[in-house]
Image 1: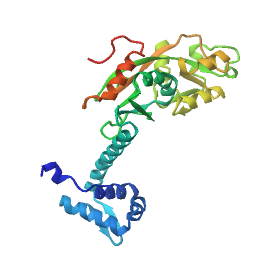
Image 2 (image 1 turned 60 degrees about the vertical axis):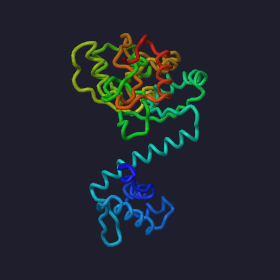
Image 3 (image 1 turned 45 degrees about the vertical axis):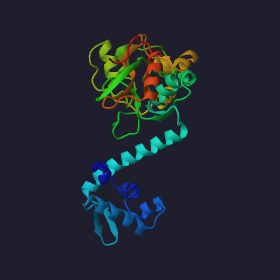
Image 4 (image 1 turned 135 degrees about the vertical axis):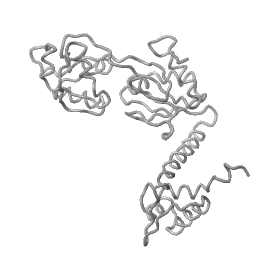
Length: 300
């Protein structure tokens, strides 16, 4: 028997440990696993015997994990998630494989999804699973093969440039009844911020003059909500031009200044450097390279 096989505990015992850590009580773990409390306790005892280490603090009628067991449970949770995702992918597409992709909601829906039918026609054997993530995460801890990311600051990844983002200040017409304002006036108006671009307004002002100082204002977590805030007159929003074409054409949003759109960053496909891209990711990445604004932009 190999060393790895000797160290591999029973799957049922690992599920019991993960459930106890996540849910907090043996009662809740038993309910989720459709077991009795005594069965959960036996699974945990089996795991302790297998590892030769204490994992539980037994106090009266409660079970608590030791600090070391909590760290172990977090690793087990990731592994169990990977097994579940791999099993689902095999059931959904046993031949061509699948790609688990984390996307930014607005960019994903406006830029990526309209292009996906072309990928599906070219590669019907690949299934793409999309999940929203707004911030960078650990590829070791999350079941994703790649992600759509704004910026080039995701450590431990390779990247493919997708599109540069051009932004401009806009607001409801009622907020500036006399027409576009001068840049100096904008800093005195209510400004709307978005969590994923915390320095966007400051960077924009610095491109057009000196540092404006403090820039307080309401913060939103997604472009869909900040656009609504601008439409309802809450303030001036710094928005990507591709997201507000309809609003600008209809006049529901107006340019807050006469300045041209500026580039403050770009969207990238990123994937972890510490593992080789699978066939599904390679096909998707190569296809995406044909959809971008750059030539020969795959990392070498």
